[in-house]
Image (cartoon, rainbow, N blue to C red; front, side, top):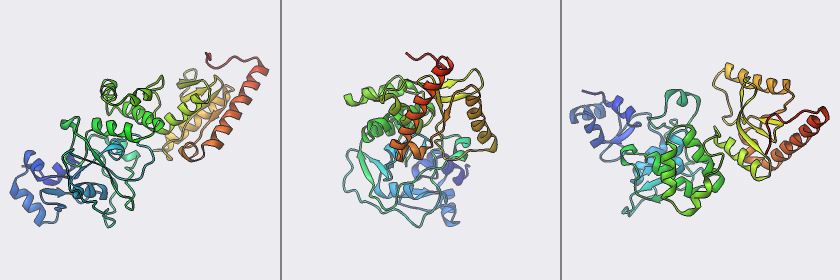
Amino acid sequence: MPDVISVLAQLGRIARVVSLRSRGCTDASLAAALAAGLVTRPRRGWLAAPEVDRDQLRAVAVGGRIGCVSALRRFGVWSGTDDCLHLHVPRTASRLTQAPARKDVENAGVWHPSVAGRKRRAREVRLASPDLSARIHWARELAPLRALDWIVSPHTALAAAVRCLDAEHASAAIDSVLHERVLSRREVDAILASLPDRSSVLIDGFTGRPESGVESLFIRRMSRAGFHIEAQVDLAGFGRYDGLIDGCVLFEIDGRGFHSSASEFFTDRDRSLIGHAFGVPVLRPSALHVLEHWPMTFAAVARTVADAKIVRRHRGLPPVMPVP
């Protein structure tokens, strides 16, 4: 007989009783787990492990599933900067109650069970602000077999997010879904094809190449400003960089705000030194610079590129890579 806590872990720490039964849990084992205080009953027909987070409980209380950008975060996908909880409910749902957030529950955000352990250790799920009202989406589930009791499938989450986010953040979400291998390019194209015409502008020559959401924003903003951007550049076999601007300035976006190890920290700095050894400046704007201080960041990047062009011309050096 499977252990109730183990099955709940496989289902994301909270699930309907019927789902637990389908995994082999007996009514006797469920009753015993409740009596022992190993699980709680947040709502009739549901059981939760001690690690359940406040957004999960809020979704169950409303009678919906975590969806849209809030669901994307659980898959490790870029989801913009919105702090409210997005919930999906069936199109036939009515009489919904805006359940308040459980501020007494202080657990860390629960990852979707499909996310690899190494990614979970390096990041944290950003929970919604408990002071904001939840945003409700009435929509059908696009991939029922990929959904869990408390969260929609990545297909449904992305379909909602590209309509909910502005264009640049929607494109970043698509890049992130592809980079994290949550969905295939074929699946993404099928989702976008089913949406209004606006979705067609979210695909461009950079799609799927940036490795973080902030990197995606940086690349497209610089490209729209008229700079030639080459994404994911290998410098003579000495290291790969997030990209190259106008053939003369490399860039690395510090998108995570921390490094998973001392060796990773050293490797990042090593790439900066290698770039300078080749006479190519390396810019390292942080996520905060891109998201909250863009005018200053853009001015600094533009000035660095202009100066680098002057130096290369003075020394008679060609671009690191040909610029069309």
